[in-house]
Image (cartoon, rainbow, N blue to C red; front, side, top):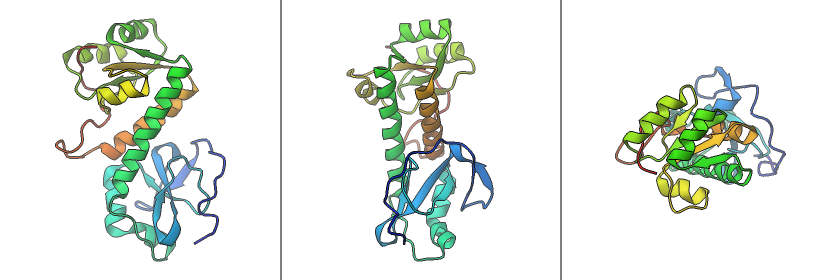
Length: 217
Protein backbone atom coordinates (compact mmCIF):
# COMPACT_ATOMS: atom_id res chain seq x y z
CA UNK A 1 0.00 0.00 0.00
CA UNK A 2 1.34 3.41 -0.91
CA UNK A 3 2.20 5.87 1.82
CA UNK A 4 0.44 8.46 -0.32
CA UNK A 5 -2.93 6.75 -0.05
CA UNK A 6 -4.44 9.33 2.29
CA UNK A 7 -2.76 12.46 0.93
CA UNK A 8 -5.11 15.09 -0.44
CA UNK A 9 -5.01 16.40 -3.97
CA UNK A 10 -7.15 19.09 -5.66
CA UNK A 11 -10.58 17.74 -6.67
CA UNK A 12 -10.57 17.06 -10.41
CA UNK A 13 -13.48 17.80 -12.68
CA UNK A 14 -15.90 14.90 -13.13
CA UNK A 15 -15.14 14.27 -16.77
CA UNK A 16 -13.59 11.54 -18.88
CA UNK A 17 -14.09 7.80 -18.64
CA UNK A 18 -12.90 5.17 -16.17
CA UNK A 19 -12.73 1.38 -16.23
CA UNK A 20 -15.09 -0.45 -13.87
CA UNK A 21 -13.60 -3.23 -11.75
CA UNK A 22 -16.99 -5.01 -11.99
CA UNK A 23 -17.68 -4.98 -15.73
CA UNK A 24 -14.13 -4.27 -16.97
CA UNK A 25 -15.76 -1.85 -19.39
CA UNK A 26 -15.42 1.91 -19.44
CA UNK A 27 -18.05 4.25 -18.11
CA UNK A 28 -18.52 7.98 -17.75
CA UNK A 29 -16.59 9.18 -14.74
CA UNK A 30 -19.48 11.39 -13.65
CA UNK A 31 -21.58 8.28 -12.96
CA UNK A 32 -18.92 6.33 -11.08
CA UNK A 33 -17.45 6.11 -7.58
CA UNK A 34 -13.72 6.04 -6.88
CA UNK A 35 -12.20 3.87 -4.15
CA UNK A 36 -8.66 3.76 -2.76
CA UNK A 37 -6.86 1.46 -0.37
CA UNK A 38 -6.74 2.79 3.16
CA UNK A 39 -4.73 1.66 6.20
CA UNK A 40 -4.42 -2.10 6.73
CA UNK A 41 -5.89 -2.96 3.36
CA UNK A 42 -9.29 -1.39 3.91
CA UNK A 43 -11.37 -0.07 1.00
CA UNK A 44 -12.11 3.65 1.29
CA UNK A 45 -14.78 5.35 -0.86
CA UNK A 46 -13.23 8.53 -2.25
CA UNK A 47 -16.42 10.41 -3.09
CA UNK A 48 -14.66 13.74 -3.55
CA UNK A 49 -11.93 12.14 -5.70
CA UNK A 50 -9.20 13.84 -3.67
CA UNK A 51 -7.33 10.95 -2.09
CA UNK A 52 -3.92 9.91 -3.36
CA UNK A 53 -3.14 6.39 -4.48
CA UNK A 54 -4.45 4.17 -7.22
CA UNK A 55 -8.13 4.63 -7.91
CA UNK A 56 -10.52 1.68 -8.23
CA UNK A 57 -13.74 2.63 -10.00
CA UNK A 58 -17.28 1.26 -9.86
CA UNK A 59 -20.55 2.40 -11.35
CA UNK A 60 -22.73 4.28 -8.85
CA UNK A 61 -25.10 1.32 -8.95
CA UNK A 62 -26.29 -0.65 -5.93
CA UNK A 63 -26.12 -4.03 -7.64
CA UNK A 64 -22.56 -3.42 -8.91
CA UNK A 65 -21.33 -2.30 -5.52
CA UNK A 66 -22.90 -5.29 -3.77
CA UNK A 67 -21.33 -7.59 -6.37
CA UNK A 68 -17.92 -6.01 -5.81
CA UNK A 69 -18.25 -6.48 -2.04
CA UNK A 70 -19.55 -10.06 -2.30
CA UNK A 71 -16.87 -11.19 -4.77
CA UNK A 72 -14.22 -8.87 -3.30
CA UNK A 73 -13.43 -7.48 -6.74
CA UNK A 74 -11.22 -4.89 -5.04
CA UNK A 75 -8.71 -7.59 -4.08
CA UNK A 76 -8.82 -9.04 -7.59
CA UNK A 77 -8.20 -5.60 -9.10
CA UNK A 78 -5.08 -4.88 -7.05
CA UNK A 79 -3.99 -8.52 -6.64
CA UNK A 80 -3.41 -8.00 -2.95
CA UNK A 81 -5.20 -8.78 0.34
CA UNK A 82 -8.01 -6.22 0.60
CA UNK A 83 -11.01 -6.26 2.90
CA UNK A 84 -14.10 -4.24 1.99
CA UNK A 85 -15.93 -3.36 5.21
CA UNK A 86 -19.34 -5.01 5.71
CA UNK A 87 -20.94 -1.55 5.94
CA UNK A 88 -19.22 -0.17 2.83
CA UNK A 89 -22.50 0.37 0.97
CA UNK A 90 -24.01 2.24 3.92
CA UNK A 91 -20.85 4.33 4.19
CA UNK A 92 -21.17 5.31 0.52
CA UNK A 93 -24.83 6.21 0.94
CA UNK A 94 -24.18 8.33 4.03
CA UNK A 95 -21.33 10.11 2.31
CA UNK A 96 -23.33 10.90 -0.81
CA UNK A 97 -26.30 12.11 1.23
CA UNK A 98 -23.99 14.45 3.14
CA UNK A 99 -22.45 15.77 -0.07
CA UNK A 100 -25.89 16.46 -1.56
CA UNK A 101 -27.13 18.30 1.52
CA UNK A 102 -23.90 20.28 1.86
CA UNK A 103 -24.18 21.39 -1.77
CA UNK A 104 -27.80 22.34 -1.18
CA UNK A 105 -26.67 24.54 1.70
CA UNK A 106 -24.03 26.16 -0.50
CA UNK A 107 -26.64 26.81 -3.16
CA UNK A 108 -28.87 28.49 -0.57
CA UNK A 109 -26.05 30.79 0.51
CA UNK A 110 -25.43 31.62 -3.15
CA UNK A 111 -29.08 32.60 -3.58
CA UNK A 112 -29.73 29.72 -5.97
CA UNK A 113 -32.47 27.92 -3.99
CA UNK A 114 -36.24 28.42 -3.94
CA UNK A 115 -38.31 26.67 -1.24
CA UNK A 116 -42.03 26.20 -0.62
CA UNK A 117 -44.76 24.97 -2.96
CA UNK A 118 -45.93 28.30 -4.37
CA UNK A 119 -42.38 29.66 -4.72
CA UNK A 120 -41.18 26.54 -6.49
CA UNK A 121 -44.20 26.56 -8.80
CA UNK A 122 -43.48 30.20 -9.70
CA UNK A 123 -39.82 29.40 -10.36
CA UNK A 124 -40.79 26.53 -12.65
CA UNK A 125 -43.14 28.81 -14.58
CA UNK A 126 -40.40 31.39 -14.96
CA UNK A 127 -37.77 28.83 -16.06
CA UNK A 128 -34.21 28.41 -14.91
CA UNK A 129 -34.77 25.55 -12.46
CA UNK A 130 -32.08 22.86 -12.77
CA UNK A 131 -33.17 20.41 -10.05
CA UNK A 132 -36.45 19.76 -8.26
CA UNK A 133 -36.31 18.13 -4.82
CA UNK A 134 -39.39 16.67 -3.12
CA UNK A 135 -39.54 15.27 0.41
CA UNK A 136 -40.00 11.49 0.48
CA UNK A 137 -43.39 11.74 2.17
CA UNK A 138 -44.68 14.37 -0.22
CA UNK A 139 -48.12 13.54 -1.64
CA UNK A 140 -50.53 14.59 -4.38
CA UNK A 141 -49.56 18.23 -4.93
CA UNK A 142 -46.02 17.23 -5.96
CA UNK A 143 -47.32 15.47 -9.07
CA UNK A 144 -48.45 18.81 -10.45
CA UNK A 145 -45.00 20.28 -9.87
CA UNK A 146 -43.34 17.28 -11.50
CA UNK A 147 -45.55 17.66 -14.55
CA UNK A 148 -44.78 21.36 -14.70
CA UNK A 149 -41.05 20.59 -14.34
CA UNK A 150 -41.14 18.58 -17.57
CA UNK A 151 -37.61 17.48 -18.41
CA UNK A 152 -36.14 19.06 -15.27
CA UNK A 153 -34.68 16.25 -13.09
CA UNK A 154 -36.82 15.61 -10.00
CA UNK A 155 -35.69 13.58 -6.99
CA UNK A 156 -37.58 12.23 -3.98
CA UNK A 157 -34.78 11.03 -1.74
CA UNK A 158 -34.64 13.10 1.45
CA UNK A 159 -36.89 13.45 4.46
CA UNK A 160 -38.51 16.84 4.97
CA UNK A 161 -36.40 17.50 8.08
CA UNK A 162 -33.21 16.79 6.09
CA UNK A 163 -34.21 19.31 3.44
CA UNK A 164 -35.20 21.79 6.13
CA UNK A 165 -31.95 21.43 8.08
CA UNK A 166 -29.88 21.96 4.93
CA UNK A 167 -31.72 25.21 4.29
CA UNK A 168 -32.01 26.53 7.84
CA UNK A 169 -35.67 25.59 8.28
CA UNK A 170 -37.49 23.09 10.50
CA UNK A 171 -38.73 21.11 7.52
CA UNK A 172 -39.40 21.55 3.81
CA UNK A 173 -41.23 19.50 1.21
CA UNK A 174 -40.56 21.41 -2.02
CA UNK A 175 -37.17 22.77 -3.07
CA UNK A 176 -35.88 23.98 -6.44
CA UNK A 177 -32.24 24.69 -7.30
CA UNK A 178 -31.55 27.21 -10.03
CA UNK A 179 -29.17 26.63 -12.92
CA UNK A 180 -25.47 27.16 -12.33
CA UNK A 181 -22.26 25.40 -11.34
CA UNK A 182 -23.58 24.36 -7.92
CA UNK A 183 -26.69 22.83 -9.50
CA UNK A 184 -24.48 20.87 -11.91
CA UNK A 185 -22.43 19.48 -9.02
CA UNK A 186 -25.57 18.69 -7.02
CA UNK A 187 -27.14 16.89 -9.96
CA UNK A 188 -24.13 14.61 -10.24
CA UNK A 189 -24.28 13.71 -6.53
CA UNK A 190 -28.04 13.19 -6.62
CA UNK A 191 -27.69 10.89 -9.63
CA UNK A 192 -24.96 8.87 -7.92
CA UNK A 193 -27.00 8.63 -4.72
CA UNK A 194 -30.05 7.51 -6.71
CA UNK A 195 -28.02 4.70 -8.23
CA UNK A 196 -26.82 3.58 -4.81
CA UNK A 197 -30.39 3.60 -3.47
CA UNK A 198 -31.97 1.91 -6.49
CA UNK A 199 -33.42 -1.47 -5.59
CA UNK A 200 -33.12 -0.96 -1.82
CA UNK A 201 -35.89 -2.61 0.17
CA UNK A 202 -38.83 -0.28 0.68
CA UNK A 203 -38.96 -1.10 4.40
CA UNK A 204 -35.42 0.08 5.20
CA UNK A 205 -34.76 2.81 2.63
CA UNK A 206 -37.01 4.92 0.49
CA UNK A 207 -37.00 6.83 -2.71
CA UNK A 208 -34.59 6.13 -5.51
CA UNK A 209 -34.42 9.47 -7.22
CA UNK A 210 -37.30 8.86 -9.60
CA UNK A 211 -40.01 11.38 -10.30
CA UNK A 212 -42.82 10.85 -7.87
CA UNK A 213 -45.51 12.97 -6.16
CA UNK A 214 -45.68 15.36 -3.12
CA UNK A 215 -47.63 17.17 -0.31
CA UNK A 216 -48.28 20.35 1.53
CA UNK A 217 -45.64 23.03 1.88
